[in-house]
Amino acid sequence: MSKSRLLDKGLNELSAILNEMAVLAEKTVSASIEAYIENADVSVQVRQWSDTLLNYYNRVGEKAVEIIARFQPVATDLRIIRASMEISYDLSRFGRYAYDISTILKNLGGHVEFGRDTVAEMGSMTMNMIESSIEAFKTRNAELAEKVGQDDKKVDILYFEHLQECVRNPPKRTEELISDVLTVRHLERIADHAVDLASAVLYMLRGEQGTAWR
Amino acid sequence: MIENPKIETKDLSVSFGSNQVLKKLNIGIRENYVTAIMGPSGCGKSTLIRTLNRMNDIIPESHVDGAVILDGFNIYDPTTDVVELRRRVGMVFQKPNPFPKSIYDNVAFGPRIHGMAKGEELNQIVERSLRNAALWDEVKDRLKSSALSLSGGQQQRLCIARALSVQPEVMLFDEPCSALDPAATARIESLMVSLKKDYTVVVVTHNMQQAARVSDFTAFLYLGELVEYGETKRVFNYPSNKLTEDFITGQFG
Image 1 (tube, each protein chain N blue to C red):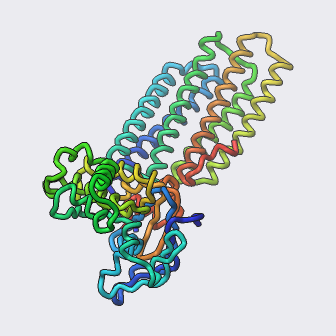
Image 2: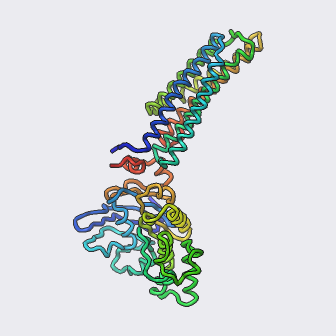
Image 3: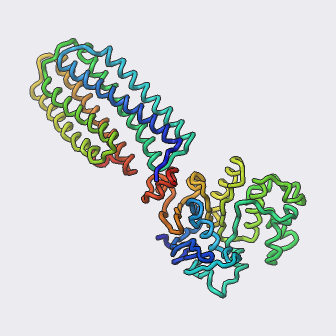
């Protein structure tokens, strides 16, 4: 029943941009988390990648508008376009939060020991959510997209437990406390954007907003 | 199911000779809304709209089974006054078909043969009809000119004015813009939407973007059967049937 359409070329271009973007977004977040744990400075590199992600986001918006203007897509096609715009936004936000994480040590005086295990654990969970949400998009997998929502609840629990621990047993250096709280906060926001990305996938597949389970 | 439909078909089947075009179709048309009927060529959409004021009666070998209920009465009942039916259910066709008469006489034709008005009262009907068809300002100074001197888009609006002049309740549009340029199409589309305030509007189109633009409800017909019917925004955002999805996304055939 399906046949080649002029619209497909535009949708394929959109998909290609998102795939490139997804690879870069994963790399950017991963680099910033690892650098934080290892007390390394990757802020210059991460800034560059974050800017590239923002450019990708703008390209997706332009391509989407062009496709809508030229082909008046409907149904699945239109939902793919809307979802692509939302996904590209979430991927660009991954880059921005990664950059924010990468500047924390530089701005707050360097070395951090406090909370590193939690950052590592939360970072790993967040990276898994990013990977799952992207995989759900690539493979059109609603089940996997829903799992991202469930994983987010675990991240939220860990986040609030850690904040309580910070109150109970703060480190001696305030800089370390602030560095740690900012970092877990950014990770929690990255996880939220992974949920938004997965929601866009569910919208694309089912035509309904998928944030109810968040 | 649509509650209190203005028009409702019940197990409507239509054949031309041995060719069955509509197959036990059940659809309710809501009053004061625009309902679009779309589908690929040969799906039966024009046949369906033409049963709503019995235009198929004039085609030899046409055979209708089932019922078409207008305000509770079956229009295929032998006692139906077909002339009166077509006054109540007006129709605009694919190609503008003004009479080779003046603009005024085209619009006055219906009220005259129905004995509805004459003199100043008739003038008022003509003006009101032309205004409602968004044509008055363009023709008010040349009402005695031939209708054939108008552009295609103006001729189509004149045909709409002609249908409105006999005060119908339902307006049927059968591919009303397929012979018009984009500007004239846009005017007719706005007109169809504005008419729903006073009339029940049904439009047949194979242009699915037009259906998306003008209608509140959309029906998708395929091979003489109603595949999908629902709110236009739902049908075009998330069609429930794969055939509908394939048709509106251009993946058919």
